[in-house]
Length: 218
Image (cartoon, rainbow, N blue to C red):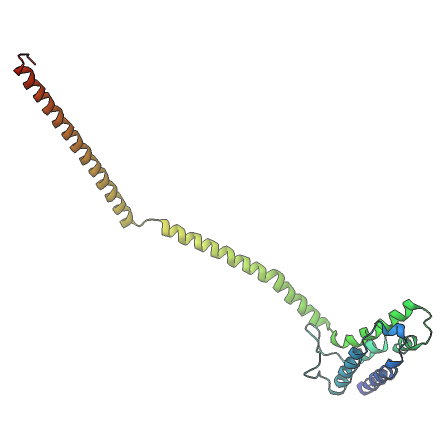
């Protein structure tokens, strides 16, 4: 069995694109409800540029990772149709008599879906790398952030505890201040007691003198 060359695939892609573009204005009114003709023409332009140059124009839509530039044989298979041929979908859409509204709708919707596949080619390696990146982003990085949060909380609590903990000098100063306060309180209490005693003694002496003057003995 003869293997087709890439140039053969390119030619087949171009033929299918031309077939679609040439019949687009012939789509019946019902089929036209489910497509955007301008968007299809724009996407056809993207395909033509890519199959000719093997890269996407700067101002054209490009595959977003994990998707990557698709190989031409894969593109041909997507456009030609994996189950229903493109030619059949076009024939259904341009039929002047809509025999089945559901069949016509499905045919019309499949056409832009085929064209959009140029942006969705993903290799197994790219898919695996994307899964690993997502796991790192959604699981491992979150775990690291949690560890960092826990570490920072512990560090802050330790720092606060250290700040609350008094140095030996601070402890000595607090003890000295406490003793000075107690000594002041004792001195003030003693002075109050002495003053009260003097007043009592003075009152007693005065009362004794009064009694003697009056002829009574104390």
